Amino acid sequence: METRKDYVDPPPARLLDMEELKSWSFYRAILAEFVATLLFLYILVATVIGHQKQAVACDGVGPLGIAWAVGGMIFVLVYCTAGISGGHINPAVTLGLFAARKVSLFRALAYMVAQCLGAICGTALAKSLMKHDYNRLGGGTNSVAPGFSKGTALGAEIIGTFVLVYTVFSATDPKRNARDSHVPVLAPLPIGFAVFVVHLATIPITGTGINPARSLGAAVIYDKEKAWDDQEGSSKISYRKRAVEINCLSREEDKEDWRKTEDPAFVEIPKVQL
Image (cartoon, rainbow, N blue to C red; front, side, top):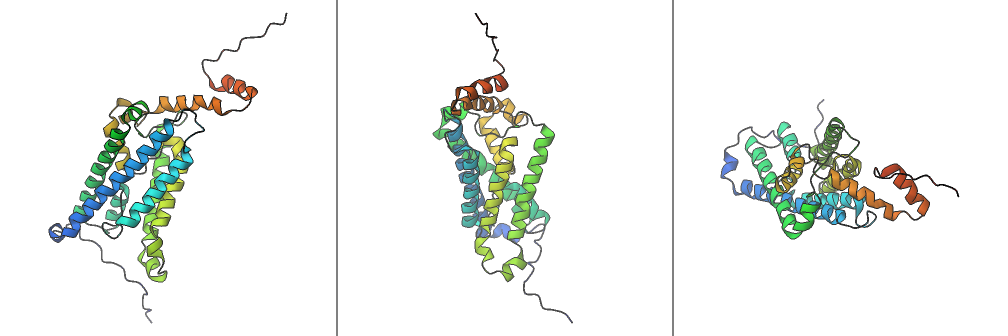
């Protein structure tokens, strides 16, 4: 005896859907992806630069604040654009949905182009508002932190991207939507939290990419050699930020210990008793 499904599987998208090219909703969705990625990169780069410009490392939002800003912005943007374009805002998400036949080839390509262009424009907008700090502090580009290899950085990015795409598929599962009526409303929330926790885990390693448009937009506008060479443009800035942490230490003994262990220019002068 067959049991009736309490959900309906959507039909797979056609590989080449020529009809959607004639629809206004198709171009409206592309515009939504462009604007959403633009706003995302603007908030992300402005937050990162705002943190890095602090004179003392203990000031500013810190990595936790950056993760909250990014995760919260993704939550807002997915909520706003889900009914228009699906709220991808990430070429990796679009590619995953295309592989699962959730979107057509034309839509996937158009989304990815719009996302990359939006990321470039969003980064350019952030640069125009804080040009001096932007050029001085690395432009918010991704970088492999000292002490980590490129292979480790690649592995961290692969795992982080998997967590995000897996969460997107779980949050938009038609079975879940049918059985839990409140889930469609809350779908942007787990996606935003996935971005938040992945940033907490990978900011110390790569600055967190997991979004090819985010990495590309920052590298294109910053346009320095090291930003393209494994996105290492801000490694020297990371050391300078780390060096100023000495000002956050409260005791002279702590400052002295920090200099001995962390400052390569430190030379201990032996004390001579008279």
